[in-house]
Length: 120
Image (cartoon, rainbow, N blue to C red; front, top):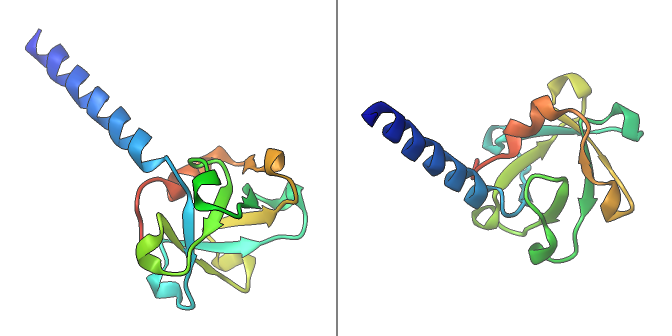
């Protein structure tokens, strides 16, 4: 019984951590690839993308890991630091910027883990 109780506590703790870290997607774009947690390539068409991204105008509008990004001015403000690469083969994830917030979201869920937690 003690093993089940410990497992339950661990599961609850992991869920709480995920909920806290997934509350916003504040993005800082760095000029150096070695400073980035994720390397991003921008594609021209939605069907080519792993993630469809909508740029929010205010940080409070950014929602979790759903492709609604708010770009911050300083790296210390960011949840994730990204570097935009010139070639697709250099990227961890391919994104396409969309015009409407309802279009934002993951097309390839296998890449979702790249944007969880505070990573720089």
